[in-house]
Length: 104
Image 1 (cartoon, rainbow, N blue to C red):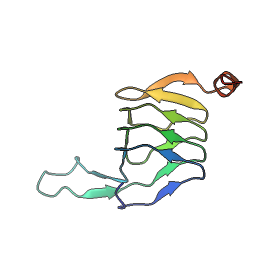
Image 2 (cartoon, one colour):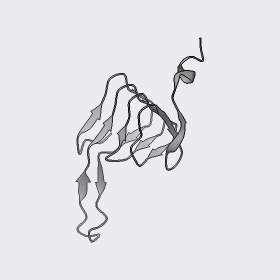
Image 3 (cartoon, rainbow, N blue to C red):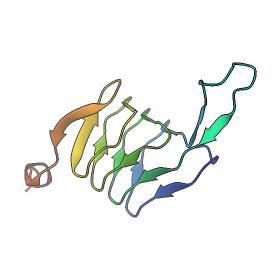
Image 4 (tube, helix red, strand yellow):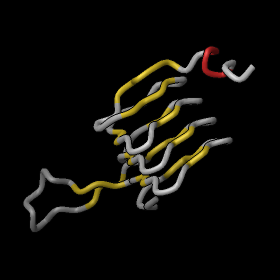
């Protein structure tokens, strides 16, 4: 995690090993000699699980109760209750009661 801008992490969030959470990015619109880092807040809401090796890019909000798969690269906002995987990350499934009741 880098602390260049505000990083909000909600309650009951699980962050697995080797996760990278960015809160700043290089402004590539500028001439390469004058490029500066832009600070962009990032939010992880309550109940999120981020699996090993995932990368969360600056400015992203991960919605409540969502899961990010191992190695995923999150480049845009993730709505609540969704499972996202891949590079770039995309929705794989909705997290509904079927997920929570499998062990019953």
